[in-house]
Image (cartoon, rainbow, N blue to C red):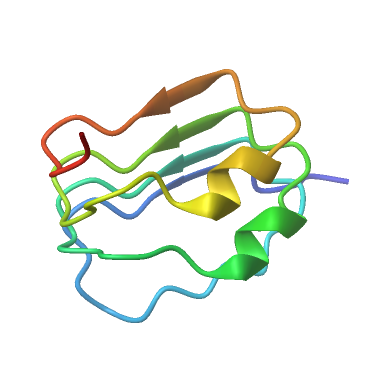
Length: 80
């Protein structure tokens, strides 16, 4: 069975709803996001997450609970 493993939502200013539990790559840069939904924790196979150039002031807590995450890019935010 084919499964979605890659979603590019760059420059997407619409509501973020992620129902894809086998997703491995999620690109969310340049969306003016300030938070990530707690449902992101359901993405147990997510290996790459890009939240660059949004409006984050701190590392989203949900990121810490992603067991397969290997690449995380958050440049261009306000995180110190």
